[in-house]
Length: 481
Image 1 (cartoon, rainbow, N blue to C red):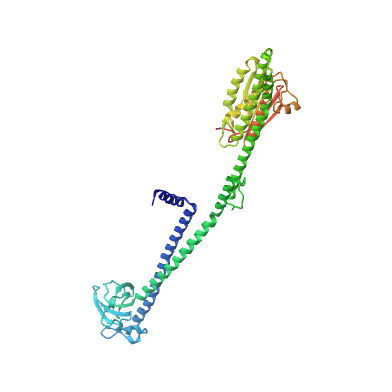
Image 2 (cartoon, rainbow, N blue to C red):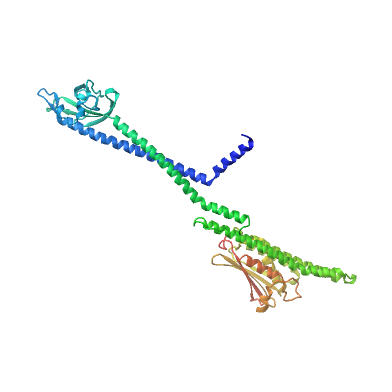
């Protein structure tokens, strides 16, 4: 065999060793084989024991019959009327049924064959010395005439009188017929159980084949999805497999949703960049040296607008890919502390006092730290731009399932009307052109919060300005880590 054929053979053997069908079939057949062998041993043993008991019971009746026919003459010698025994085998030489009377000495020894049946002919049964209580029956297996195996029952009797001699009555029968019947039964049982094993193995194979058929249907469905013939797993599956199919279809739907969202965002980004690019293109067509400072300002403005659009779409793309990943956990307090330090430096000339009030129990956001920084940074930056002198941030945990937390950012600025609050959340809308910005900050916060399953609401603040309420999913129970 060449090396390639050897590798193919090894690969085939490895395939079978890893095959679920092979494993299930091997385990099932092995279990069935063990059960069949044990059943065969038990049945054979029970049959052998039953035949032995029946044989002993019939032989005990013969012993009782010989005992009943045993008499003693005037000298105390035993006499058995052989003609009174009912079974004709007693009279046929080597018939397989024998009786014998032995004299027992006080020391346990005795004289064998004082009386014996005609079936013993010129032989006698030689038994070992056995201490028997009067009337007790012992069972032995010995070799008899012509080497045949015999089952022997013996009993000790006495003549009348305390000093009477003891006699051992022996009845024996040939075991060959019984052993042959037992062997025949064992052979038939073995053949029957072998046939049963074959049938059970076939049933096991059929059961495994039928049981694994849904997996083959599932495999074909996956191939259809892979080859773009369908977008979902389709077909009828058992109740045990259907949850897997539903979960996989959910994953496919999620992937399709992410892909469609990515395409939409790419189109939106391209559309959003068209305007600043067109402005820059028109300004560069016929440049006037006198317009140098204005052109530079225009370029800076449009580049800033383009950068804000890019940042906004990148943030949406990142959150779309990670918003529902399990195990994400970001502590609120460190993020808030870092943002407050940044805002104090960015708005150093405005003399705005930022106060933070967080609960003693730590709160955790079920998402990425970068997204939490993006949302809270925009809210704090917007509040600092509009505040006269004070910005306040606090947070609390909300009950229910799933757990949530809400962060409040409010300022003491001029405030806005209800209609303006709804308008402020629209992308690119600036309520006051004198305040620097692109109009995307609150829209970014709202989009990020929505993609995490949260929301952003603008409300009147007790300080006089606007209070932004940002509700977000909390990690765990929004309590201790």
